[in-house]
Amino acid sequence: MLMEKLRTHHTRDIEPEEMADKNVNLAGWVHEVRDLGGICFVVLRDREGMAQVTLVKKKVDADFFNKAKKLMRESVISVTGTVKPEEKAPNGYEVLPDDITVLNESCTPLPLDTTGKVEAEMDTCLDSRYVDLRKPRTSAIFKIRHEVLKAVRDNFTREGFIETTTPKVVATATEGGTSLFPITYFDREAFLNQSPQLFKQILMSGGLEKVFEIGPIFRAEEHDTRRHLNEATSIDMESSFSDHFDIMETLENTIVHAYSQVKENASQQLEYLGIDLEVPETPFKRLTYSEAIDIINQYGKEELEWGDDLSTLSEHTLGEHVYNETGAHHYFIIDWPTEIKPFYAMPYEDNPEISKTFDMMHTRLELSSGAQRIHYYDMLKNRIENQGLDPDSFDFYLDAFGYGMPPHAGWGLGCERLLMTMLGLENIREVVLFPRDRRRLSP
Ligand code: ATP
Ligand code: MN
Image (cartoon, rainbow, N blue to C red):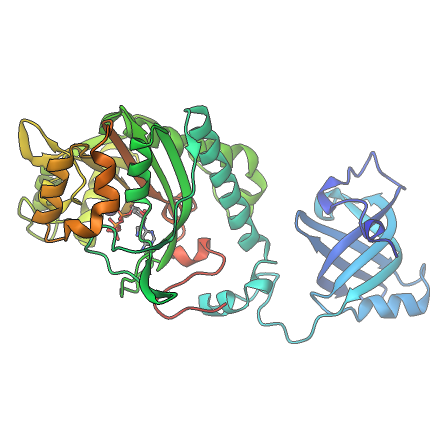
């Protein structure tokens, strides 16, 4: 049999009235078989949706009817038949089959139920992603992930950014602080990169002016939370001749474009997930770090001092307060103490205690961190030393600052955090095909 003959249409491509009595070939998985005695429904599922294949006992060959009745759920089949409009069936039609070919039979029992009637534990879903992905709800998440990434690329492109890819195997620990995964690189020790930070800054010296990268970041953090992965996807940008306020606008545009493209191109998927997506309004509220501390101290359960980093609990207090005041989930915290931000963050000239930095938040968690960067060689080298890091191991980076580094700014946005907050999902693992966390290294 020729492969192209296995399928002439996806289930969603069939127009019930227009194609009535036409012959079609559908291919996909057996979602369900409902045997009602005199009539048997085989629900065929493909990537785009479902179709009902109807066999009436009195009208078809007895062997054919019995074979259909006994189809194993999740087997792969191809169906040849005629389209008949039927209001009660999915997509408004049914197929009266001439033939059903089993292309590959599924074993039984299945690792989990694809109809969604029996809920499976997260671990079971992740262990058997190949079946889990067949659930319309799960595949919807990844279609939406595709739409988000596409929209992000679109937005960068229309704002004049070029896409870059930088090494993930590196010789030095990027920023200190976060722990790294060491690996063996021939006879040397190397690390998996925790962020493209240093490379994208070098590209500013290289004159590329506006770059973005969508790629993996690796963090050997021990924590086991619902918002951290050990391998995550970071959406990163860097822009020359820009300050932190300029790139906050790019960030707002990125978020809004992602939401509106998902709303426009993935309505079916949003429906599967039961989401009525609201596109956030810009500009997002901007709080200073000092204002944030005041709010936390006034409304929260803990007392913070100026200079403290924000705990998860304080992020919740703040997020709820902002949401109650503005009705918006997204907001910025700007002007952080220089000391608690990475060495490359630019201090304000007139008040070096605070820096040209921001975090962009969603009610319950951080989505992005960004800053105007230090572009002066001496200042940067000092900051590296002050943070207890060894400037020698940063030569490859520092060198780029001695020969015409323009002022620049940039941010990193967690792709998975963006998705989980957009879709209201509690666990970050739901938006990654094969998550890497403290316990999970396979599949
Ligand atoms: P957090 O404090 O929430 O752990 P961070 O401040 O350490 O995050 P950054 O180094 O600022 O993270 O990274 C930029 C963005 O990348 C974060 O705002 C977040 O969206 C995403 N990100 C960072 N680390 C992780 C992780 N372990 N898992 C998932 N996303 C991450
Ligand atoms: Mn951060």
